[in-house]
Length: 150
Image 1 (cartoon, helix red, strand yellow):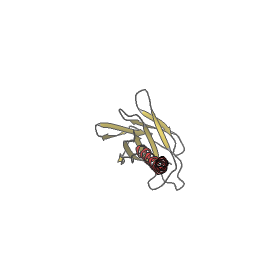
Image 2 (tube, rainbow, N blue to C red; image 1 turned 180 degrees about the vertical axis):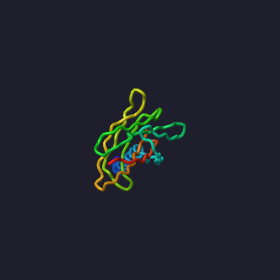
Image 3 (spheres, helix red, strand yellow; image 1 turned 120 degrees about the vertical axis):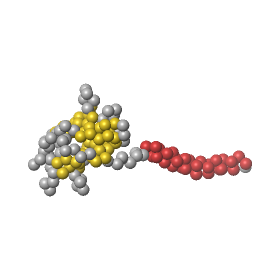
Image 4 (cartoon, helix red, strand yellow; image 1 turned 90 degrees about the horizontal axis):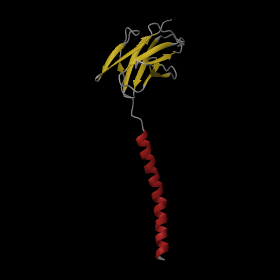
């Protein structure tokens, strides 16, 4: 009788403990894989985009540039000098207007300058004011406003 009682107790503990253990493991995995919120974007005005504009972020100077005359639906080059960077991405939007998914991963050239050819969609409202958001290693974010030509 004592053995039967012990077996029932084990079964009860397994019935309660196993689901609790599974919930705890799932919570731990989700917590460890949760992404940190993106960094706050540093606004980088760029009156001469073709020659590039530089922001001092900590002890690193980051230079961002793009073509001088940009037209929608026509490819143009974006470049970023970010010493020591591993991953650089750029996305484009208008202030208070979603322009769809347009995320570009820039690739380093032989000089270590990250580059990509990008194409902007046309805005049906005729607006030409854009903001390029540059993410560097998910730790640094720059917001570069610019305008397109007609």
